Length: 210
Ligand code: FES
Image (cartoon, rainbow, N blue to C red; front, side, top):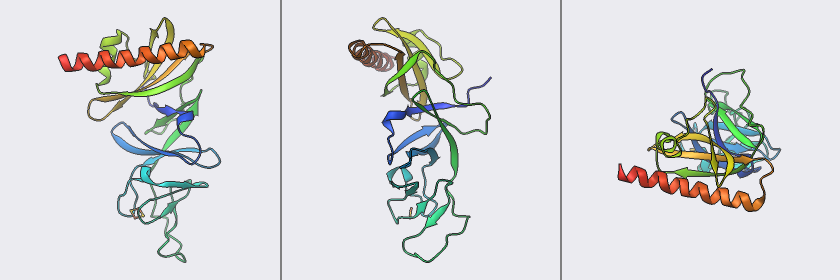
């Protein structure tokens, strides 16, 4: 079964009323959480004049553009144009939306239409995300671990079972969303986090030497 979900962030890194930029399958996205906790992934481009919506702000269940304040409801439909407060915006003014979902503390996005739920990662708990300035292929070479069908790379760091969810980014960069074995102590988690940074350094050094 082909992978159709991409991990884009830890749930706790996108709290209510926060919007972040990301990229999935080459598409620039704004991932945001409403005041009530609903997660969404939209094309990172305002239908008005193209400003990045990831620079915008969340009010309640809507995301507003930072430029002229056009506001979009949870379906991506424009619901308010501040310069024309009495105008009911036509349905044609709509932000393209993707499917976002959460599972085991991870935010997943798919650009496809799918009935398949996002992957579950039983036995693991989210640790942290970090970006590495190398393509995913260098990560697999350095770690000597293949990437599974869910974008998961399993390895031991600091002697502890870990799982890295791999998110390819433009410019030969890769985001890694790391999980550790459930029940790992805070001290051991700190060791894993340092080992993860060592892995990043090793991969980036390898890349420079190539
Ligand atoms: S560019 Fe977004 S409201 Fe004008």
